[in-house]
Length: 577
Image (cartoon, rainbow, N blue to C red; front, side):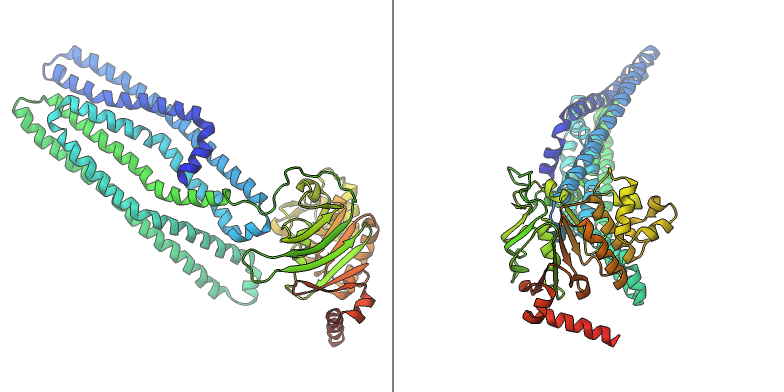
């Protein structure tokens, strides 16, 4: 998965990678040339007392060092551009893939896991690319060149390389092989920490209301301890890597000096050659150590790449048609033909056998017990899911044949949990119509019974809204979400229990104000209160995902026992109150 991800997203950076390779090659050659020059200074200058040779070769060494430094800086610069560009592209690809998901795919992965994959997982792979460009590319060049130059200095000591390199490779390989499963587990436990923390922050009021702080502290400590123990296990293995490298480097250096001294005494080697051989030996092992940095990152990056690729390879269940229809034959109409929907692998469908039709100016209300499929039905109209049987038509065209942008521009959705974005009242209201005027915003607020409290807020339309709308009440959030849909002036309004937080008086005023603005649109209204839906043109009654009644209020009281039971229960509750 890692190779596949890198090949896919680094293809556009071939030119920059070529430049990095060229720069790393030059700086590696320069670093390999320095020990030879040092040997020449010792043998031709220091040993003979020739000052001119020392100055001449020393000046050349300084020039080579400057070249090495300049090319090394260039390699780091271009390598960083490759890594940062790679990270940007992968994050962008993940973002566009996730935003194309239907609610079904989002629920499979979960929001905490998707956030971790887009941020932490991408960062791990990006760091691997950066370290590869700055360290790993130069390492094999240095190893191969260093071996050749070391053998050129003295072939008699080259057997030490044949011993040291395999020992180092085997030791590091054993450590890395044990780190891979730990890194996979670590990413999963980061997901768990994100999930628990997100739940606790979002549900802070509930936690405090039920005095569950001690239990939530224990819950967080458990997932935190799981992550800590896994990280410590991986950290202990990582801590072994550098002692192994240093042990091999220092042991090999002692062996080189030991055996090299004997060869110098026998006249088979010069002092300069020994110093150069030791330098090459150290360069080779340091190059292996640099590759170790990459080896540390590779297992974790491989796990992260697998998680990233899993998201990128997951197709959305809501597909864009090959030849999308852009024109609606019957604007403002909604029709459901024997609609059924079930989740993959579920024992029973969520919805089945639903047929109804509504034209412009009509209101279809949907009522039923909790879990009867009311919200799912609205999501099918908005094509947040695709039906598994039957068809949904908006404007006389099957939504699966419509251009999604055309469909969503014709729909005004007020979800069950109204969500406001951080910004101002105006930016939230203009979310569906960026060019809306202030007069249009105030008119929508008037209809949604929100004008008074918005006018009382500091700044009016420019009043600050925090993330999720946490600085306004639940009823105010619902009214602002309704106003947002009204500003868009869609052909189809989808109200998913959008009046639940309103008192009966506000509810009645809002529904009365809505009537003139929905005269040319279809309204699909999910509600729990009978008073909210009693005046609808048709009322669909659902029970366990199956339609058990369709008609007007008075007719259903006689013909539909389920509806009559709902009405009786609410009447009894009001009498008891």
